[in-house]
Length: 219
Image 1 (cartoon, rainbow, N blue to C red):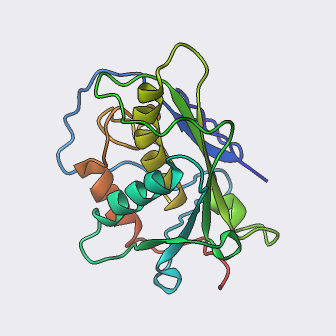
Image 2: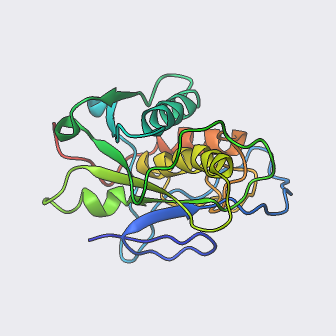
């Protein structure tokens, strides 16, 4: 069972998807606020933070191209949001011992320096929904996929997009099951920023101090 989230509208299906990179108007007046992180598909409200007993969360990165560096970037970006180490991640060398597997969906893009210009929709990403995976006893690993988009994008534009989208998708894998409505948050459905914002930080901190309704199986 999987769920799909599109890039411009939220549609609960089997995977949490994000792309993007098309800029939206960067307007926000939201001092101290957070956004919704729970899966509210009727009839349940499902909350998923990784429990302390499963730290560090183990990531397996597709060894091809820039993926190991992208996964390292995303782990560091999210660890930095927690004051007391509520989340920690490590890269695993064995995919059979991973909690989260991050892989290429299509071809492997060239590993080049990211383009410093305006963000464009040069890549796609998707994440299996933890609340679907961990309520189904047949599965206990989350999957994140990344892929370059076709079109007239440069390799550098694809690389820049992947840096944003990998952090966004790992945010879903950590339990941020909804998209932020604010364009300057990494969890906006079309992320244009390169790191989690202060609102992303407050939201994930609240998530990791909210009682879970969904837990992964023991290791």
